[in-house]
Image 1 (cartoon, each protein chain N blue to C red):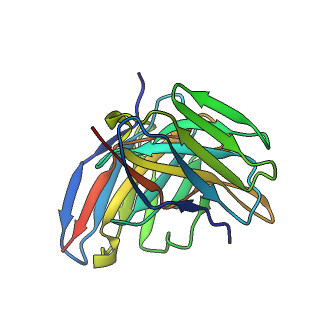
Image 2: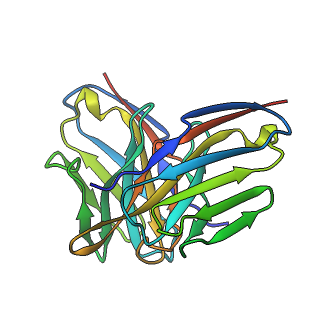
Length: 115
Length: 115
């Protein structure tokens, strides 16, 4: 069974601090996606990482895909209150027949940035 | 900007009643999905739909669930006889092609409350 474990589950920090959240699995994923979800809304895609070791930057957000494609991290520099939200990682479900065409989600990291 | 729209935003139903959740995917997308998120838990895949038929479904998607694309624009999820444990946010999503490496766009969700 493919599982994505995210840590920490909750993170409360002050504005201006840096933070890293993690997404780990014992399974290899062809790609991993990071989403942000606001309360009462659907997930919104931030980035997709595809190549082992890949690093992608989105303004103050840096995403890294592990060399073995089993894990990923999201680093936020100088966090702002507007970064508050639920950050989800997701990967494509696969079985022995190949791609299942669906996404497996982690439980998410709930980030709160206080002014 | 094109978006996935879902109606209603909130549905309250009595246990045992049938409910239909509606979604209008992005117009040029070919793959459609339903996911659900029970309060405090992770987003879970229910079903994917392509070329007017189910392409994948999860263990959650039992005989009580069905999907339909009745008129070429709407994509519906029907729950025949709702149970208390069906209470959740239900998200519709669509993508241009199969989900791997392709962005899946999520709707804002329908909050289903079964009483």
